[in-house]
Length: 129
Image (cartoon, rainbow, N blue to C red; front, side, top):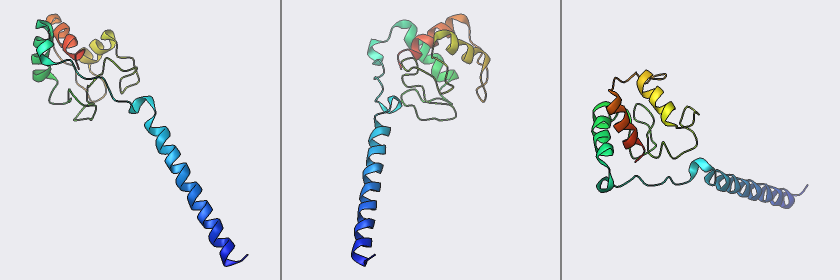
């Protein structure tokens, strides 16, 4: 095989590899998990319950969870947590599941002691994220 043919084969190989990489990147960016998330409800539009829930969140949750991003702090970020198909655990983000995780903890998350009213307000706030 001549040096010219070897060079042509390498060029085609690298071109194909670049094309496949670009195709893989395009496919990865089009996955459902990579879509932009819906925006949080503006604070000016919060109900009384949502505002009280924000206070509970800042006292009990903010040290471990960011409210307006999915990036983790000590626990997962909670942006749009009630608007996605599954939480980081894989479970659907129902109020029942969120209540269980908040009340009883899960893995590294400790149980959180809240009154029933605080819990309902917190869930209302989480729905605004």
